[in-house]
Amino acid sequence: MQGACVSISCVCICVSVLLHSAISQPPTESDTYTECTDGYHWDLQTEHCKDINECDTIPDACKGGMKCFNHYGGYLCLPRSASVIPAPEPAITPTESNPCPLGYEAQDDSCVDINECERDEHDCQPSQQCINTLGAFTCQCPDGYRKVGIECIDIDECRYRYCQHRCVNVPGSFSCQCEPGFQLAGNNRSCIDVNECEMGAPCSQRCYNTYGTFLCRCDQGYELDADGLTCKDINECGFSSFLCQFQCVNEPGKFSCVCPEGYQLQGTRLCQDINECETGEHQCTEAQTCVNIHGRYQCVEENRCQEPYVQVSENRCVCPVNSGHQRLPGAYNTFRIRSGDENGDFYIRQINNISAMLVLARAVSGPREYTLDLEMVSVNPLNSYQSNYQTSSALRLSIYVGPYTF
Ligand SMILES: [Ca+2]
Ligand SMILES: [Ca+2]
Ligand SMILES: [Ca+2]
Ligand SMILES: [Ca+2]
Image (cartoon, rainbow, N blue to C red; front, side, top):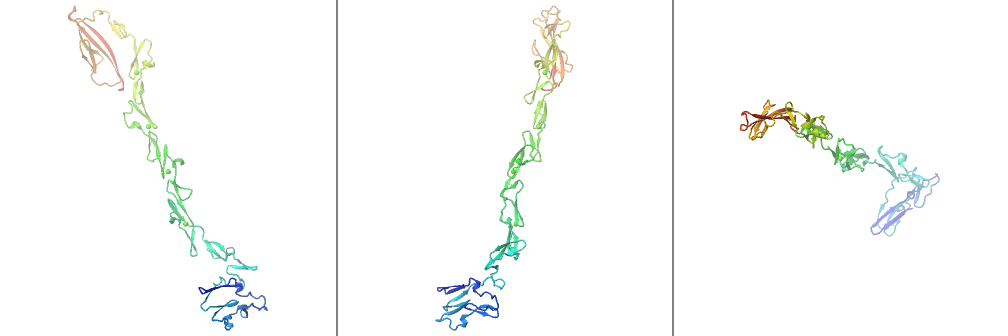
Protein backbone atom coordinates (compact mmCIF):
# COMPACT_ATOMS: atom_id res chain seq x y z
CA MET A 1 0.00 0.00 0.00
CA GLN A 2 1.24 3.42 -0.72
CA GLY A 3 -0.12 6.93 -0.74
CA ALA A 4 0.76 10.06 -2.62
CA CYS A 5 -0.59 13.53 -2.30
CA VAL A 6 -0.11 16.29 -4.79
CA SER A 7 -0.41 19.90 -3.89
CA ILE A 8 -0.42 21.98 -7.05
CA SER A 9 -0.46 25.32 -5.32
CA CYS A 10 2.85 24.87 -3.56
CA VAL A 11 4.06 22.44 -6.11
CA CYS A 12 5.15 20.09 -3.44
CA ILE A 13 4.60 16.43 -3.35
CA CYS A 14 5.19 14.04 -0.60
CA VAL A 15 5.24 10.42 -1.01
CA SER A 16 4.99 8.41 2.08
CA VAL A 17 5.42 4.78 2.40
CA LEU A 18 3.39 3.61 5.29
CA LEU A 19 4.30 0.08 5.56
CA HIS A 20 7.59 -1.40 4.83
CA SER A 21 6.02 -4.50 3.43
CA ALA A 22 5.22 -2.42 0.38
CA ILE A 23 8.81 -1.34 0.00
CA SER A 24 10.13 -4.72 -0.82
CA GLN A 25 8.76 -8.09 -1.40
CA PRO A 26 8.82 -10.51 1.49
CA PRO A 27 11.85 -12.71 1.40
CA THR A 28 11.55 -15.85 -0.57
CA GLU A 29 10.62 -18.93 1.27
CA SER A 30 12.22 -21.26 -1.22
CA ASP A 31 14.94 -21.15 -3.77
CA THR A 32 12.49 -21.66 -6.57
CA TYR A 33 10.25 -18.70 -5.73
CA THR A 34 11.49 -15.91 -7.97
CA GLU A 35 8.20 -14.29 -8.98
CA CYS A 36 7.66 -10.60 -8.11
CA THR A 37 4.61 -8.36 -8.26
CA ASP A 38 4.22 -5.69 -10.92
CA GLY A 39 6.86 -2.99 -10.72
CA TYR A 40 9.44 -5.33 -9.18
CA HIS A 41 11.88 -7.75 -10.66
CA TRP A 42 13.87 -10.58 -9.09
CA ASP A 43 17.41 -9.58 -8.21
CA LEU A 44 19.67 -12.60 -8.33
CA GLN A 45 22.41 -10.92 -6.37
CA THR A 46 20.37 -10.03 -3.32
CA GLU A 47 17.76 -12.68 -3.94
CA HIS A 48 15.06 -10.07 -3.26
CA CYS A 49 12.39 -8.48 -5.39
CA LYS A 50 13.78 -5.12 -6.46
CA ASP A 51 11.92 -2.05 -7.58
CA ILE A 52 12.02 -1.35 -11.35
CA ASN A 53 12.96 2.24 -12.18
CA GLU A 54 10.37 2.82 -14.89
CA CYS A 55 11.72 6.29 -15.54
CA ASP A 56 14.91 4.67 -16.81
CA THR A 57 13.54 1.58 -18.44
CA ILE A 58 10.43 2.97 -20.22
CA PRO A 59 11.27 5.41 -22.97
CA ASP A 60 9.10 8.51 -22.80
CA ALA A 61 7.30 7.22 -19.76
CA CYS A 62 5.71 10.61 -19.27
CA LYS A 63 4.26 12.58 -22.12
CA GLY A 64 3.40 16.23 -22.52
CA GLY A 65 6.47 17.61 -20.84
CA MET A 66 5.69 15.95 -17.56
CA LYS A 67 8.55 14.82 -15.37
CA CYS A 68 8.95 11.17 -14.39
CA PHE A 69 9.32 10.30 -10.69
CA ASN A 70 10.16 6.70 -9.85
CA HIS A 71 8.90 5.12 -6.66
CA TYR A 72 8.52 1.67 -5.25
CA GLY A 73 6.31 -0.50 -7.41
CA GLY A 74 5.49 2.28 -9.90
CA TYR A 75 6.22 5.81 -11.08
CA LEU A 76 4.53 9.23 -11.20
CA CYS A 77 4.31 11.84 -13.93
CA LEU A 78 4.31 15.31 -12.39
CA PRO A 79 4.80 18.87 -13.66
CA ARG A 80 8.43 19.78 -14.23
CA SER A 81 8.24 22.39 -11.46
CA ALA A 82 7.30 19.78 -8.90
CA SER A 83 9.77 18.48 -6.40
CA VAL A 84 9.53 15.35 -4.41
CA ILE A 85 10.19 15.27 -0.66
CA PRO A 86 10.87 11.68 0.19
CA ALA A 87 9.34 10.34 3.35
CA PRO A 88 11.86 10.03 6.14
CA GLU A 89 13.77 6.85 6.21
CA PRO A 90 12.16 4.38 8.52
CA ALA A 91 13.95 4.36 11.87
CA ILE A 92 15.07 0.91 11.29
CA THR A 93 16.52 -0.83 8.47
CA PRO A 94 14.73 -4.04 8.42
CA THR A 95 16.90 -7.04 8.49
CA GLU A 96 16.31 -10.50 7.48
CA SER A 97 15.85 -11.74 11.07
CA ASN A 98 13.66 -8.80 12.18
CA PRO A 99 11.54 -7.19 9.52
CA CYS A 100 10.00 -4.78 12.07
CA PRO A 101 11.17 -1.22 12.87
CA LEU A 102 13.82 -0.75 15.52
CA GLY A 103 12.35 -1.37 18.89
CA TYR A 104 9.73 -3.74 17.53
CA GLU A 105 9.81 -7.39 16.76
CA ALA A 106 7.63 -9.65 14.70
CA GLN A 107 5.12 -11.68 16.55
CA ASP A 108 2.77 -13.73 14.42
CA ASP A 109 1.85 -11.31 11.63
CA SER A 110 2.40 -8.04 13.44
CA CYS A 111 5.19 -6.05 15.00
CA VAL A 112 5.11 -5.62 18.76
CA ASP A 113 7.15 -3.34 20.97
CA ILE A 114 10.25 -4.76 22.59
CA ASN A 115 10.45 -4.13 26.36
CA GLU A 116 14.13 -3.32 26.54
CA CYS A 117 13.88 -2.71 30.27
CA GLU A 118 12.70 -6.20 31.02
CA ARG A 119 15.19 -7.79 28.71
CA ASP A 120 17.99 -5.72 30.16
CA GLU A 121 18.80 -4.43 26.68
CA HIS A 122 19.05 -0.82 27.81
CA ASP A 123 22.06 1.34 28.54
CA CYS A 124 20.68 3.18 31.56
CA GLN A 125 23.10 3.98 34.41
CA PRO A 126 22.79 1.80 37.52
CA SER A 127 21.27 4.76 39.31
CA GLN A 128 18.69 5.32 36.61
CA GLN A 129 15.33 3.74 36.13
CA CYS A 130 14.56 2.26 32.73
CA ILE A 131 11.12 3.22 31.38
CA ASN A 132 9.85 1.27 28.40
CA THR A 133 8.15 3.25 25.63
CA LEU A 134 6.65 2.19 22.33
CA GLY A 135 9.57 1.43 20.06
CA ALA A 136 12.14 2.70 22.52
CA PHE A 137 12.93 3.30 26.20
CA THR A 138 14.10 6.17 28.35
CA CYS A 139 16.41 6.37 31.34
CA GLN A 140 14.79 8.26 34.19
CA CYS A 141 16.63 9.75 37.13
CA PRO A 142 15.38 9.04 40.63
CA ASP A 143 13.41 11.71 42.48
CA GLY A 144 15.61 14.54 43.56
CA TYR A 145 17.95 14.19 40.57
CA ARG A 146 17.90 15.77 37.16
CA LYS A 147 19.41 14.42 33.99
CA VAL A 148 22.43 16.20 32.58
CA GLY A 149 23.62 14.33 29.51
CA ILE A 150 23.45 10.71 30.52
CA GLU A 151 24.26 11.46 34.15
CA CYS A 152 21.85 12.10 37.03
CA ILE A 153 22.81 15.16 39.05
CA ASP A 154 21.41 15.91 42.52
CA ILE A 155 18.98 18.82 42.59
CA ASP A 156 20.06 21.45 45.10
CA GLU A 157 16.61 22.21 46.44
CA CYS A 158 18.09 24.70 48.89
CA ARG A 159 18.70 27.11 46.03
CA TYR A 160 14.95 27.59 45.74
CA ARG A 161 14.51 28.89 49.31
CA TYR A 162 12.01 26.24 50.12
CA CYS A 163 12.73 26.14 53.84
CA GLN A 164 11.67 28.88 56.25
CA HIS A 165 14.81 28.69 58.36
CA ARG A 166 17.64 26.41 57.31
CA CYS A 167 17.94 24.02 54.40
CA VAL A 168 20.28 21.04 54.25
CA ASN A 169 20.84 19.59 50.79
CA VAL A 170 21.62 15.89 50.60
CA PRO A 171 22.03 13.65 47.54
CA GLY A 172 18.60 12.98 46.13
CA SER A 173 16.81 14.97 48.73
CA PHE A 174 17.01 17.81 51.26
CA SER A 175 15.68 18.61 54.68
CA CYS A 176 14.50 21.74 56.43
CA GLN A 177 15.78 22.55 59.87
CA CYS A 178 14.62 25.12 62.38
CA GLU A 179 16.50 27.44 64.68
CA PRO A 180 16.54 26.57 68.39
CA GLY A 181 13.17 27.27 69.96
CA PHE A 182 11.29 26.28 66.81
CA GLN A 183 10.11 23.00 65.42
CA LEU A 184 9.28 21.86 61.94
CA ALA A 185 5.62 22.24 61.02
CA GLY A 186 3.54 19.55 59.39
CA ASN A 187 4.45 20.83 55.95
CA ASN A 188 8.10 20.03 56.69
CA ARG A 189 9.24 23.47 55.65
CA SER A 190 7.73 26.03 58.03
CA CYS A 191 9.06 26.52 61.53
CA ILE A 192 6.69 27.08 64.42
CA ASP A 193 7.46 28.25 67.91
CA VAL A 194 7.94 25.58 70.53
CA ASN A 195 5.84 26.18 73.63
CA GLU A 196 8.56 25.26 76.07
CA CYS A 197 6.23 25.87 79.00
CA GLU A 198 4.03 22.98 77.91
CA MET A 199 7.04 20.79 77.27
CA GLY A 200 8.49 20.94 80.75
CA ALA A 201 10.63 24.06 80.61
CA PRO A 202 12.91 24.05 83.64
CA CYS A 203 11.43 27.17 85.22
CA SER A 204 11.26 26.60 88.95
CA GLN A 205 8.15 28.76 89.29
CA ARG A 206 6.38 30.59 86.45
CA CYS A 207 6.96 30.06 82.75
CA TYR A 208 5.98 32.41 79.93
CA ASN A 209 6.21 31.22 76.35
CA THR A 210 7.57 33.71 73.81
CA TYR A 211 8.27 33.53 70.09
CA GLY A 212 11.40 31.45 69.74
CA THR A 213 12.10 31.08 73.43
CA PHE A 214 10.54 31.34 76.90
CA LEU A 215 10.98 33.31 80.09
CA CYS A 216 10.99 32.25 83.70
CA ARG A 217 9.50 34.49 86.33
CA CYS A 218 9.22 34.17 90.08
CA ASP A 219 6.45 34.54 92.61
CA GLN A 220 6.44 37.45 94.99
CA GLY A 221 9.21 37.14 97.54
CA TYR A 222 11.53 35.32 95.14
CA GLU A 223 14.04 36.52 92.59
CA LEU A 224 15.43 34.88 89.48
CA ASP A 225 18.86 33.38 89.88
CA ALA A 226 21.67 33.99 87.41
CA ASP A 227 20.72 30.87 85.45
CA GLY A 228 17.42 32.51 84.50
CA LEU A 229 15.51 29.43 85.58
CA THR A 230 15.73 29.04 89.31
CA CYS A 231 13.87 31.21 91.78
CA LYS A 232 15.60 31.88 95.05
CA ASP A 233 14.14 33.38 98.17
CA ILE A 234 14.68 37.07 98.78
CA ASN A 235 16.15 37.73 102.21
CA GLU A 236 13.99 40.72 103.06
CA CYS A 237 15.57 40.96 106.49
CA GLY A 238 18.85 41.91 104.87
CA PHE A 239 17.33 44.98 103.22
CA SER A 240 16.65 47.03 106.30
CA SER A 241 16.84 46.80 110.06
CA PHE A 242 13.57 48.75 110.34
CA LEU A 243 11.31 46.10 108.86
CA CYS A 244 10.53 44.75 112.31
CA GLN A 245 10.45 46.50 115.63
CA PHE A 246 12.22 43.62 117.31
CA GLN A 247 13.42 40.83 115.04
CA CYS A 248 12.98 39.87 111.41
CA VAL A 249 12.76 36.20 110.45
CA ASN A 250 13.35 35.35 106.81
CA GLU A 251 11.11 32.64 105.36
CA PRO A 252 10.77 31.12 101.90
CA GLY A 253 8.99 33.73 99.78
CA LYS A 254 8.32 36.07 102.69
CA PHE A 255 9.48 37.25 106.09
CA SER A 256 7.88 37.74 109.42
CA CYS A 257 8.46 39.73 112.58
CA VAL A 258 8.71 38.19 116.00
CA CYS A 259 8.56 39.77 119.44
CA PRO A 260 10.43 38.87 122.63
CA GLU A 261 8.80 36.94 125.41
CA GLY A 262 6.16 38.95 127.18
CA TYR A 263 5.27 40.87 124.01
CA GLN A 264 2.87 40.13 121.20
CA LEU A 265 2.83 41.25 117.59
CA GLN A 266 0.65 44.27 116.90
CA GLY A 267 -0.04 44.32 113.19
CA THR A 268 2.90 42.93 111.26
CA ARG A 269 5.96 44.64 112.71
CA LEU A 270 5.23 46.29 116.06
CA CYS A 271 5.53 44.64 119.44
CA GLN A 272 3.12 45.29 122.26
CA ASP A 273 3.45 44.29 125.88
CA ILE A 274 1.14 41.56 127.01
CA ASN A 275 -0.87 42.64 130.00
CA GLU A 276 -0.66 39.41 131.90
CA CYS A 277 -2.81 40.81 134.66
CA GLU A 278 -5.69 41.24 132.24
CA THR A 279 -5.19 38.12 130.19
CA GLY A 280 -5.04 35.97 133.30
CA GLU A 281 -1.62 34.56 132.51
CA HIS A 282 -0.19 35.79 135.82
CA GLN A 283 0.40 33.52 138.75
CA CYS A 284 -0.13 36.00 141.60
CA THR A 285 -1.91 34.70 144.70
CA GLU A 286 -5.18 36.07 146.05
CA ALA A 287 -3.25 38.06 148.62
CA GLN A 288 -1.12 39.66 145.92
CA THR A 289 -1.78 42.40 143.44
CA CYS A 290 -0.78 41.82 139.86
CA VAL A 291 1.13 44.74 138.41
CA ASN A 292 1.69 44.71 134.68
CA ILE A 293 5.04 45.97 133.48
CA HIS A 294 6.62 45.92 130.03
CA GLY A 295 7.71 42.45 129.11
CA ARG A 296 6.44 40.86 132.26
CA TYR A 297 4.37 41.40 135.42
CA GLN A 298 4.97 41.49 139.11
CA CYS A 299 3.07 40.20 142.07
CA VAL A 300 2.96 42.75 144.85
CA GLU A 301 1.97 41.96 148.43
CA GLU A 302 -1.29 43.66 149.33
CA ASN A 303 -0.07 44.94 152.71
CA ARG A 304 3.28 46.57 152.50
CA CYS A 305 3.04 48.73 155.57
CA GLN A 306 5.70 47.99 158.10
CA GLU A 307 5.60 48.76 161.81
CA PRO A 308 4.83 51.31 163.13
CA TYR A 309 2.95 52.19 159.92
CA VAL A 310 -0.53 50.92 159.39
CA GLN A 311 -2.35 50.64 156.10
CA VAL A 312 -5.16 53.12 155.67
CA SER A 313 -5.95 52.52 151.99
CA GLU A 314 -4.74 50.35 149.14
CA ASN A 315 -1.43 52.08 148.66
CA ARG A 316 -1.22 54.19 151.78
CA CYS A 317 0.40 53.63 155.21
CA VAL A 318 0.40 56.12 158.03
CA CYS A 319 2.19 56.38 161.33
CA PRO A 320 -0.66 56.62 163.91
CA VAL A 321 1.45 58.43 166.51
CA ASN A 322 1.73 61.57 164.50
CA SER A 323 -1.61 61.49 162.83
CA GLY A 324 -3.57 64.62 163.57
CA HIS A 325 -0.51 66.79 163.39
CA GLN A 326 0.35 66.17 159.80
CA ARG A 327 -1.53 68.54 157.59
CA LEU A 328 -1.05 71.96 159.03
CA PRO A 329 -2.23 74.90 156.93
CA GLY A 330 0.46 77.31 155.94
CA ALA A 331 3.20 74.75 156.01
CA TYR A 332 6.25 75.01 153.79
CA ASN A 333 6.88 71.85 151.84
CA THR A 334 10.17 70.67 150.37
CA PHE A 335 10.70 67.54 148.27
CA ARG A 336 13.71 65.27 147.92
CA ILE A 337 14.82 61.82 146.85
CA ARG A 338 15.60 60.06 150.06
CA SER A 339 17.04 56.81 148.68
CA GLY A 340 17.26 54.54 145.64
CA ASP A 341 19.08 56.90 143.30
CA GLU A 342 22.71 56.19 144.05
CA ASN A 343 23.79 56.91 140.51
CA GLY A 344 21.96 60.23 140.33
CA ASP A 345 19.75 59.13 137.47
CA PHE A 346 16.86 61.25 138.78
CA TYR A 347 16.31 64.65 140.32
CA ILE A 348 13.38 66.54 141.81
CA ARG A 349 12.06 69.72 140.34
CA GLN A 350 9.67 71.48 142.71
CA ILE A 351 6.88 73.22 140.87
CA ASN A 352 5.16 74.95 143.79
CA ASN A 353 4.61 74.47 147.50
CA ILE A 354 2.56 71.33 147.08
CA SER A 355 3.81 69.69 143.92
CA ALA A 356 7.07 68.51 142.48
CA MET A 357 8.19 66.57 139.48
CA LEU A 358 10.54 63.59 139.35
CA VAL A 359 12.81 64.05 136.33
CA LEU A 360 15.00 61.45 134.63
CA ALA A 361 18.43 63.04 134.39
CA ARG A 362 19.82 60.80 131.65
CA ALA A 363 18.85 57.97 129.38
CA VAL A 364 18.87 54.67 131.18
CA SER A 365 18.97 51.26 129.57
CA GLY A 366 17.14 48.25 130.80
CA PRO A 367 16.46 45.86 132.11
CA ARG A 368 16.67 47.75 135.35
CA GLU A 369 14.61 48.30 138.45
CA TYR A 370 14.60 51.35 140.71
CA THR A 371 12.97 51.61 144.10
CA LEU A 372 12.90 55.32 144.88
CA ASP A 373 11.81 56.70 148.22
CA LEU A 374 10.61 60.26 147.71
CA GLU A 375 10.01 62.49 150.70
CA MET A 376 8.00 65.62 151.28
CA VAL A 377 9.04 67.51 154.43
CA SER A 378 6.48 69.99 155.80
CA VAL A 379 7.48 72.79 158.21
CA ASN A 380 4.94 75.14 159.83
CA PRO A 381 6.76 77.90 161.66
CA LEU A 382 3.68 79.94 162.58
CA ASN A 383 1.35 77.54 164.31
CA SER A 384 3.79 75.16 165.78
CA TYR A 385 4.51 74.91 169.43
CA GLN A 386 8.03 73.98 168.61
CA SER A 387 9.89 75.94 166.02
CA ASN A 388 11.54 72.85 164.52
CA TYR A 389 8.36 70.85 164.23
CA GLN A 390 8.10 69.15 160.92
CA THR A 391 6.32 66.23 159.34
CA SER A 392 7.50 63.84 156.66
CA SER A 393 5.51 62.07 153.96
CA ALA A 394 7.22 59.36 151.97
CA LEU A 395 6.34 57.90 148.62
CA ARG A 396 7.89 54.64 147.51
CA LEU A 397 8.10 54.50 143.77
CA SER A 398 9.05 51.35 141.91
CA ILE A 399 10.34 52.02 138.39
CA TYR A 400 10.84 49.16 135.92
CA VAL A 401 12.98 49.89 132.87
CA GLY A 402 12.29 47.30 130.21
CA PRO A 403 15.05 45.82 128.06
CA TYR A 404 13.55 47.21 124.87
CA THR A 405 12.61 50.61 123.55
CA PHE A 406 9.03 49.50 123.03
CA1 LIG B 1 19.17 17.39 46.83
CA1 LIG C 1 8.63 29.53 72.64
CA1 LIG D 1 12.18 35.57 102.24
CA1 LIG E 1 3.44 42.75 130.72
